Every structure is written in structure tokens, then in C-alpha cells.
Amino acid sequence: ITKTSGADYDAVVIGAGFGGLYAVHKLRNEQGLNVRGYDSASDVGGTWWWNRYPGALSDTESYVYRYSFDKELLQKGRWKTRYLTQPEILEYMNEVADHLDLRRSYKFDTKVDGAHYNEKTGLWNVITDSGETVTAKYLVTGLGLLSATNVPKFKGIDDFKGRILHTGAWPDGVDLSNKRVGIIGTGSTGVQVITATAPVAKHLTVFQRSAQYVVPIGNTPQDDATIAEQKANYDTIWNQVKNSVVAFGFEESVKPAETASPEERERVFEAAWQRGGGFYFMFGTFCDIATSQVANDAAADFIKGKIKKIVKDPKVAEKLTPKDLYAKRPLCGNNYYEVYNRDNVTLADVKADPIAEFTPNGIRLESGEEHELDIVIFATGFDAVDGNYVKMDLRGRGGVTMRDTWKEGPLGYLGMMEVDFPNFFMILGPNGPFTNLPPSIETQVEWIADTICAMEEEGVRSVEPTVEARDAWVGTCREIADMTLFPKAESWIFGANIPGKKNAVMFYMAGIGNYRNAINAVKEEGYTSLIRNRTAEKV
Ligand code: FAD
Ligand code: NA7
Image (cartoon, rainbow, N blue to C red):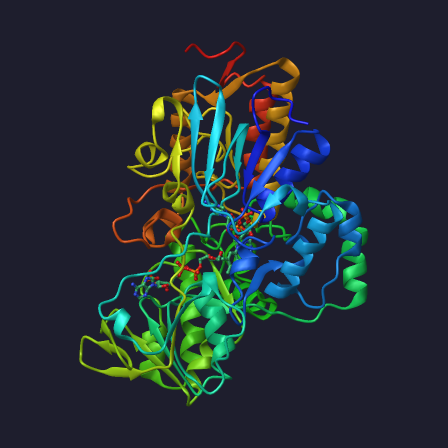
């Protein structure tokens, strides 16, 4: 039963990934609201429904890449290795949906084209591509921050006779064996798909624009005793995770590399290399790799030394050696640099010799060199964070569009709200935490649900942040980011991967513990940074 008079639903939730599913659970199962969910995918899973490419894997350890709230499911958790593969995560999300009976609230294969706030009714009109328009008091978006695929435009692409695929929209049934495969992109996804493709393809050509720092992932089998111990200690584990910085399940280092001796640095980096894990290498070894040039150089030099040792052809090793800072999303892979010692793998450095065009038979570089290919895989990433928001026709108070509000770069209050967008809540919106994401998603959904609950209890009709509060939050995020080296490297974290996209701060980089304190303070202070209207809006 809908509690909001005159509305079809109390809340519409967009997305059926970690964010959307938990929002439907909180609002429907716990708060008794009438909720409708939408996803353009055909089922639950979000990221893990779309990204079915070979090698797709989470690089957050299995025991913390999941929800913490459902203790029963935590104890039932099954995993065999340190990290979860895409099919395992998808299976887990299906299990969550079954356990909490979430599917019945969703319409799948349905894209939300737009949502307009109606000031007269105080409701959101949500417009879908199936021709359905529904109204709801609350709009909760779990659109995903790495979800809107980035497909660069290349000359001649329509003439290519082979197949073109993007990792983020991977169809079932693709067989790469014995094919001449080209992969464009060497980010986190590229590293995974490259290492999985090399052993099966007839020939693999990697088109690398920026060389990357890649440490081993260390995806070791997990024995039953380790898993049983993790399960027995979940309360302690989640407490640590939610009060940490990157929420990856390890204690971040408190020791600066700046003051460590060369021998100690070498020893700590080597141990981390043997242990595996990208975030661990950056945040678990020393505390200043992301903030101090000296520490960053030390970590970068260590990885560069490994590349030199691993890659047999010095010319290839040179191409694989990064020239910039170690300050993008930290990457890890399974024997990544070793791939380039294989006879069936070619590395094309497309920074030195850019892709000129696609030809009917493959890709031609500016030098004239042509690579003949049957399949080209775009591992070219995403229009991160705000991509799905600006693709939609989102309109708030007075018809103001999100595209306009964010034309100089995305803003957002607490990573969840926006000025002039009443009763609108984003999960992983701009300027939210930069962490292992499920714990941050839970944190946000719980805050959103609490805020909605307080509104319902107090008879509040609409809620939105003040301009001052929003601008202060964005300013805080900028200040924190500027204390790190991350803005100095070009990556999706600041929007640098999309041609023409404004460089902007898009994350709160002070860690999940500080983030939780900040948003809880807003709640405990009685939401004074929000405009809360109790009466009907003036017509
Ligand atoms: P998503 O899972 O992205 O779900 C968003 C959903 O919204 C999608 O299903 C989409 O179809 C739907 N949607 C969007 N717009 C519309 C619309 N207009 N209408 C209808 N539906 C819409 N994070 C980690 O913490 N650790 C990792 O190891 C990790 N590995 C990753 C590996 C890959 C390959 C990728 C792509 C991401 C990875 N991530 C990782 C990030 C990952 O996206 C998050 O961990 C998490 O899955 C995000 O959940 P979400 O619900 O916020 O968004
Ligand atoms: P990323 O990290 O954005 O990587 C994309 C890669 O594609 C990167 O190497 C890019 O080079 C490359 N790219 C992008 N456009 C082009 C063009 N036009 N030509 C050549 N190469 C190009 O995306 P991922 O999917 O790997 O990872 C995103 C996140 O998703 C990741 O952090 C995980 O959390 C999951 P560049 O470096 O820009 O020179």
C-alpha cells in the first residue's frame, strides 16, 4: 500500500546492483514503503550482470566484497579463492535477491529515460523506455559509478568486418579461442581480460595508451580453516573495515616510506608483491605513497624494477614502464607483465604511434602498421561517477537539469544529494568515498533510509541540501584530494579519461571511517544542513 497520497509508489529505486538491491530491502522490507525498482539489465547484479568478460574478477578480498548486514548470508557465504570471479559474485547477488525476495519489486529490461520533480505535487515523475510513467515521493538512484561505458570513436569503425565488444556490456557465448584478438585499454579491466585472453587466443595485440603499475593479485585458494575463522570474526572484521580508510579488510600502514631506509622499503614492497593486492600495495605498505612524492617514487621504482626483471625483451619492457606517477586506481593482475613474454602477444604503444583508423581487416596505426584482427575488445572503461546521471533527463526544482547543474563537473552533498533535487538520493553519487564499495554502499543506503524514516515520522514533505552545505562538502572533497597525488595523474577518478569532460573532484578521499563520522554528524545534528519542508509546496 502506498503511503504517499496521490503517488503510484512511495519510492522508485533505479538499479539492481549492490546499491539498488539494498535500498529496496531497507525501504520496502524494513520501512514498509511501496517501492518500484527498475534496471535496464535483465536481472539483478548491476556491474556483475554486465561485466561478463573472460577474467572478470573483484580485487577486493572475497570475505569483504559482500554485504555486512545480513548475518545469515554471511555465514552461508561460499568462496574458494581469495577473490571472487564474476560468476561467483552474480550467484551471490542472486542469492541475496532470493533471500530478501527483492525481484518482485523490479521491472527489468527497463531503462529510466528521465525523472522530473513536480513542485505542485511534490512527487517525482519517472519516465521509462517501456512507455510507463510512474510517480513517487522519493527517487533513489543506484546507477553505478563505473557503469556508463566509454566507447571511444575511431575512424572507419563501421567498416571493420570483425566483431567489436566492450567489456562492460559483454554478451554470453563469445569464444576467443583461436582468434586474432585486439584489446584496447590497459586499466583494471584491460589487465584482467588481457591475462585471460593471452593463453587462448591465436594472437593477441594489446593497444596500450598509458603503461600501468600492476602488482600481482595473489589469488590463492582459501582453505576451510581460514574461511571459518573469517566467518567467526565478522563483527570484528566489519568494525575494522567501516572505521578504516579504503575498507579493504587490511589495516592501512601508519609508517611513512619517506623516513624508511632503502632496505626497509625493499623488504616491505617485496613482501607486498608476494602477498598480492593492488590497494594493499598502495595503502598497506606505507602510509604516504598516495601523498608524498618521495614515497610514490619509491613504490614506482620498485614496480619498474620488477618490469625490467620480468619482461625479457628490453624494448617491450620499456614500453610497459609507466612514465607518470603511481596515483591512479591501484591495479593488480595475475602474471600481467609475463603475458608480454609470450610468442602470441604483441604490444602496440598507441601513445607513440596512435590508432589512425579501423580498416575492414583490423586496426591501422598512424605509422601505417596494420594489425589484422577478428575481434576487438574495448577495455576502455567508463564515463565514471556522473556518466549515468547526465545521460538521463533528470530535472529538479523549476525544471533545472542535472546536466546543467553539473556542467562544470559533478557536485553533490555527502555523495548522496543535490541542491534543487528534493527527495532525491544517490547511492555512490559524486563526492562519496573512494573505497572497497559494498561497505560504502551500505553506509549510504542506511543513511538514506534513516533520513527517509525521519521524514516520514516527522511529516516532512521534502528534503534537499542547502547550497552552502553542498558547496562546503565539495570544497572539503577538493581540499582532501589536493593533499594527495591523485589529481596529478590522468584517470577516470577525476574525469580525465573522457574527451571533453571537465576535470573535477569526484571522491571524498579521507576514508570510510571519516566519511561515516561526517554523515552521521549530519543526522545527529538533526539534519540542519538540509532544507526540510513540512507544508505543501506553494503552487
Ligand atoms: P552497479 O552495480 O553499477 O549497478 C547499477 C545498475 O543501474 C546497473 O545494473 C545499470 O543497468 C542500472 N542503471 C543505470 N542507469 C539506469 C537507467 N537509466 N535505467 C535503468 N537502469 C539503470 N568495486 C570494488 O569495491 N571492488 C572491486 O574489486 C571492484 N571491481 C570491479 C570490476 C569491474 C569490472 C567493474 C566494472 C567495477 C568494479 N567495482 C569494484 C565497482 C563496482 O561497480 C561496485 O563495487 C558495485 O558493484 C557498484 O554497485 P552499484 O549498485 O552502485 O552499481
Ligand atoms: P580505465 O581504468 O579507465 O581504463 C581504460 C583504459 O582504456 C586505459 O588504459 C585507457 O588509456 C584506455 N583508453 C581509453 N580510451 C582510449 C582510446 N581512445 N585509445 C586508446 N586507449 C584508450 O577503465 P577500466 O574498465 O579498466 O577500469 C575502470 C574501473 O572499473 C576500475 O578501476 C575498476 O574499479 C573497475 P589511458 O590510461 O587513458 O591512457
